[in-house]
Image (cartoon, rainbow, N blue to C red; front, side):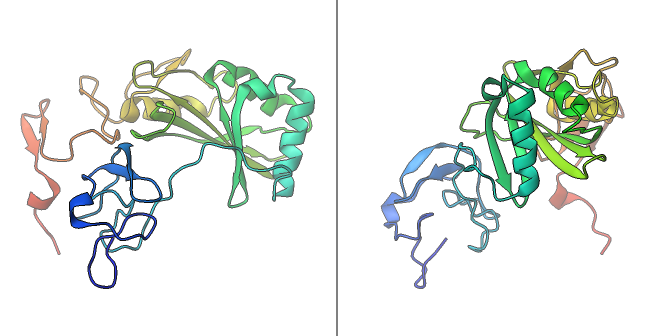
Length: 250
């Protein structure tokens, strides 16, 4: 990011001397100090601002791993959390934090408590989240907890007309989570996709096999450290070239 005279600036908007620029891929705290290795960099390869556009228009804030203040600003979020506190006594140990953002409540759950919490969310009359409408994987290599792989579940209560996000994170050294197929059968193909593309292993899944890539494919293509260049396609004896070398039809 640059100031009016083209002088580089840090994430706090303060001027940074030419010799103090951080290396590409480092995160920056207020004051321009590098905060350790990360991945954000703009379209031109510069890093340190959180701006991925290269034009100073998109700046990602430094994440804060805290819960939203209670009472929440959303009435449904308060109702769901209050009900959970009443019917799920171990909630404080099961949930790392609860965040309300853009009118949606997200519970960041420890994997050891996932199945028990899921059963309560589905079966309790005051909750009744009968439908798992989506489950997806996300890769945050610079996650502050050190657990880069996230499994994000979108739940819907058709009884109470509410939605809830449940998010669980694991490290790539032990990327295992209990499968939710025993609670919500719709998790079946969603978990296969997250396993295929992110390498999250859902224990207890009835048939955890690749769903998009060939069975003998090496790696997980939606991880952030997966190569974006030409990819050898061994099972066809061909190569997919990098995006800038592919034929243009425009």
